[in-house]
Structure formats: C-alpha cells, structure tokens
Image 1 (cartoon, rainbow, N blue to C red):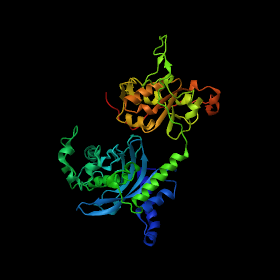
Image 2 (cartoon, one colour):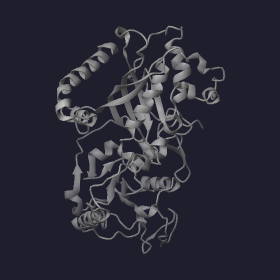
Image 3 (cartoon, rainbow, N blue to C red):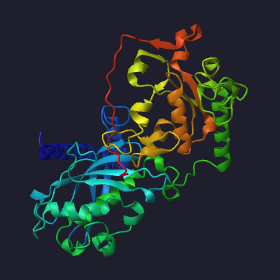
Image 4 (cartoon, rainbow, N blue to C red):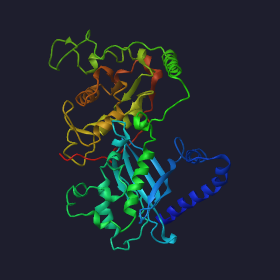
Length: 452
C-alpha cells in the first residue's frame, strides 16, 4: 500500500468517525476529550492494547491573507521512549488552492520529556516529513505541491526551513504567530546557514506557517503527558474538595500503603564487621571498609538474601547476559546485561561498539548524549537496588560506574553471583533451564553518539 493510500485511508476513517458522532454531539454535547476517549477505548488502540494511542487535536490554521480557522489534526502514533515521545500527526497544511488538491500533510515529530518537568523546556528532537527518527521507517508525507507555485521545491524547504525547529523548545516558539516572528540571526545560526533567508518563504506557501502551527498544537497535546503533571502553568483548579479533606485522604492513603507490607529494615550495603583479602597475594584479611563494593563485604548475599526478598521497595537485577540468565536465574530478577549494554572499555572510541560507557568503571566515558538517561532507566535512582551477576565482579564494576555518574550508593547492594546461590534453601526460588539456548543481538537505536 502506498503512503498516499495509507494516508487516504486514515482521513477516510476520521471522516466516518465524525459522521457517526455528529448527531450525538448535538444530543449529548460530546467534547473532543469524549471523542479521544472513544477512539482509544472502543478499539484495539491505546495503552495495553495492540496499537499505540491516537488523538484528535485542534490546530489553529492560518491562510495566505492571515485569516485563521480552527482545523483538526489526527495524531495517529504516540509512543513514549526513554526521554522523549514519538508522534505522527496528519493535518491540513495548504488551503490556498482548490479543495481537490488540499492533501493532508503528515509529520513525524520527537518531543523530549525534560528533566525540569516543564512543558516550556520540551524540545523538538526530530521533525521530519519523510523518515522517522531512526531513519528506518517512512513516517511522514509532504502534502503541498512540489514545487510550490513560486518555484521552491520541497527539498529546499526540507534542507533550509525544517532544520530551524530541531533543538528549539516550546518556550522559544510558543508565542510565534507566523515565520515573520522568527529572528533572522537565529534562523541563520548554525553551520552552512548564513545565506538562508526567511524572505524565501514569505508569501511563497502557507505550509511553512502551518508547520509552526502544527508544532505548537502538538506540543500543547504533549503537555497532557503525565511527565508534566507538576508544571504549574498547566494546573487546573480543583474545587471539589477542601484542603482539609485532601490532606486527610493523602494521610489515609499513605497509611494504607505502609500497612500492607511488613518489611525488615535494610542494613547499610557494606558490613564492616566482615573481613576480606585486599589482593590475591595478601596473606591476611582486613576489615571491610565503607565504599567497598565487592560481594565479600556486602551486608546482603547468599547468607541472608531470603530475609530481603519480595520487597516492594527493592528492584532485583541480574547483570548477566540473556543466555546465562535463561539457563539459570533467581525468579523475579530482571536481566540487564552489563557487558552487552552498559560497558566496554573501547566503546567511546570504537564506533562499531554500542555500549553506554567506555573508559574505566571508576572513570566511565559516556558514549551517547543519552547514556545517563538510559542508565537511570535501567537502574532508577529513587529505588533500592539488589544487583547480582555470576560471581559479583561485574556488579562491582557497575557500582563504580553508578558512583561516578552520581548515584546514591547507600541504596545499592552487591548481593554476589549466581554461583553462590546453590544451597538447598534457594532451590525453590531458582529457575533452572539448561536446555534453553539464546543467541541475542544487542544494540541501541535513536541515540546521539558523542564524538570523542
């Protein structure tokens, strides 16, 4: 099926939907929120189903004479990645010619989830009317003529105008009305852009203004993501309860959560009453000291792990490769392969390697701009972590990396290796499937490699 046919099918589906809902709107005062709820609950769309969430969003379209009309865009793809959300949105771009050529334009857009939690800081990571952010999928479609009546081609728009928005935040573009509000010096900043002019597009096509309008509308919709729940600029007053009632409910809820599970107090990660040999040639053992990440000094290991299992406040992680994990592992431990994904000493200098960090465990060098973000997704800073491997050595390396990248080491435990959990007390907790063999291919997609 061609892109045009897929696009036509999407638009036809929207038309049919509104035909079905129109009579109901008068009778039941249906809102856009009702429509979007219907779209994501009446079919296999949305969270927990077979396809991604969709939405219809209002777009304040502007035409050549600067007259504005409210149109709608159809967000046909919403997928939250680690630190950004992928969107595909179809909208009417140009209305300056007869309706028989007013094709819908489809944009692929990545919008970030900034650490600040403020929508104004959300950044346009990718804007494309062709390939998606990975370059593997044709997710966009340019709906205007090519060339436009004044002679400019889509290639010119794609090379000169579209890149201006990449890297811009919502705060930087939200108050623009048309491209006339763009500062020329800002537009010309960047390598190879000094000769570009906004006059090239002024009056040439309304599509360039409606790229701006589409982005503003999409980012407003982006603001409905839970990531922005604490953005004061997006708050809506709640008048259903008094402050006293709310506080009482919060206290009651907290008491309910605490009361559901009795958990034993966790010791400090290092047991300073234990001893170890500081080197393989040492003849005497010395007391374990704070900051020792080795399994021998860990306060929790095979000798007492049973006392600390199944806790709601702990993430249990196995850092062996999937092949070793599949053959034998402790149940309910999540596999995050350390050498396959996290660390390779040469990863920062060898582009054929894709691990998150190179260098050394004590001085790790990020390979990608997103390395720390993904590391935190694997090993959340707000959780207590019980981490194991085969013997405990790679956990020690990982803990050094986490310390170097700013983790609170008072919440991270090296519980040792699978080889140490061979006692009969762990038999019922062990999944032993020696007959299973896994050949895994590891990689990352859509990350920005740092040039070292």
